[in-house]
Length: 197
Image (cartoon, rainbow, N blue to C red; front, side, top):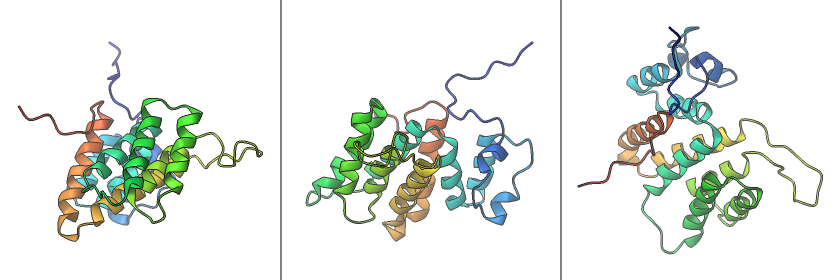
């Protein structure tokens, strides 16, 4: 009898090793890699040892680009809103618009929104992750310059990491919550906590 893959699972690679090629993981994280370990058991092992930086990098690379950008936006939305900085909300909205409709217009909208954020805020990284998802990095009227395949993953990892670091007293709790949300997305969920009844 053939094994049928779960269509909700977003990670398509069969082994964690396939995803880790080219990632600079810690020695402790690499110790969990054997040739056959599947992606989510590897993620669980790394999270279980509180290797959060490794887990974030891994999940940002493992998720498809749209799901990775959604994960980033979900994490960054947990931060307190700053009414004095409307460009942060605009950056997240632009990234989410691209997730909902990954058109060239929405990708360029994410670029514009990211460029309006002048510091290294996680909302900027989230919008850049959407912009770097494909297409060209050059202006529309210039010769095409393709982004590297891992640019989105790197921007997502930066956004999630910085979002966790913004409140030093909440780093561990945020890392755990963010990784739970990412794992939920990898399993076909929304990454958001269930509505309270």
